Length: 362
Image (tube, rainbow, N blue to C red; front, side, top):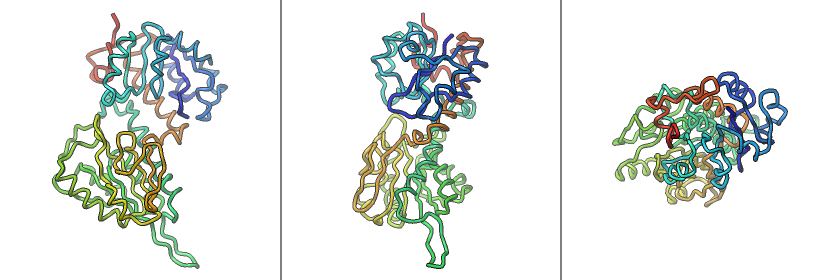
């Protein structure tokens, strides 16, 4: 059985780092093929794979691989180049793009969508969304520090004292908690808001101050996503956020609702009240953004406020992102690849939820 790792399109990451791919070969009993240049942008040159894998052209890899693992789905134009019973493992996002399931079935492919792995304790070691979100939360703070025209920490110098920056984090899931921890390590004063009351203890354990807004709909089964709230609650939350935003130097937003547009937490009139030089990092940009003015994939300035729309900041730390992503996928593949063969237990809840086409082709 050949495990194929293609080069990503417009992405610096690679699905497996060399060390993890070596483990996959040993533990899954597969042969590994890597496309030429697949790891170069992640600082993994082809030579780092040669002890473990065969480095081949893209055409060879697509034609011969039994399993293709990629961070982003292969272009649809390439599906017809794959073997008839090939398995493709990627982030297909069927909640956002439901039509992809039918297209994969029509192409005769077995498909596993990594974003559909249940976000439970049992599947924690396979959770690529949490791994990448943690990196994004960390990088969001560094990105804010890059654009902010002042220090994060308090400094007392012979030339005078510098007050610490204030960072407001909206959404205290995986990305938000990492942002809180990173901002605190840089010496900022950190406040955070989340609809889940359970997040209060986590925020405070990291040294942040939790902003309470009463009346939230709480759903502990939401799997790390925000849940849809009433308009009354969102109105009160926006009012509270507006008061905090006027004093904040940095706002990092992370709130997303699975399969729906991200909740709008920072309307234009709130941004208008922020201090010139303030920075907004919107990690929900790809699903509409938590800030009304966000433009996905762009850095803009509005009344002196810099707004960064980027939902995939983990691309900016491609080496560690590739390493963690590959580890998650390896743990996942252990469920159904053993001794170089498919052994698929369709009663396994992780498999049943993440296989978005037939687990076993007729």
